[in-house]
Image (tube, one colour):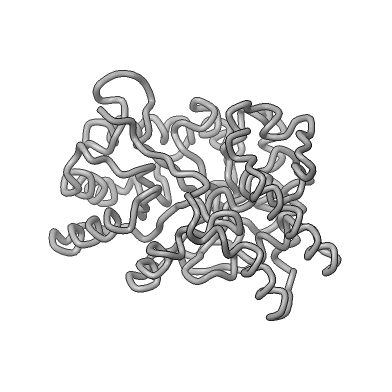
Length: 325
């Protein structure tokens, strides 16, 4: 496994990270624990979760899995998206973040989180309040680094400016949807992150499985995300399914899998620090790990860029925002 600094910080993270959105939902507890242990044994140290994944089950399962193994993991979680209907059950106010961090620490069975991320921009809370709260959490030893998620370029730049002006700890990372099927970050976010030393952590790196080719011919395999989550069908557009088929053909010529090829392309993009991949079976994670040893020539890179070029100026594959109040 290769390791990179997360942005311009000194924190070293594995080039491939483990996303845990499915744990406690599409993967049961024992399967999830096996996946976590296999990831750690394979050299993956970055484990990403959130306080809303599978309700709160993802965090709880990770807490069980990391007993005796906590020091092997760079543990990241998030807060900010709605946890309920109450007036203080979402956003990035001091009130909400302090409550959510304490609850996350309890579920994760740990005293600290390595990377605490604001899940989305909160237009109702001053950035000074959010960033001072995060700075206080670092001073208290409950978190080590802070990151952002689903921020627009101007929102992230404003946050960095507030941190600099107020001498608060600053975001070192940004999570966003990024893949061959969603290259919209290349318009503004990638240049910003390169300039400011922010590490990009792509989510949906396989476009929810579309880039694996499993939906070719408009199939819906049993147990797939589209099969278990009816709302996922909105992502299954003809142009994305066609892209998955094209990536599959290129991968076949290389004697590789489309999963490994898609991840290999993404991990080599500018500003990307670690790519988080999900898994509901150990075998899925093993397929993703093949991307670490996959290399390809400039001609293949050009072909991948060409077949995905239309997704630079398309709509983002996914972005998560707070509902309007």
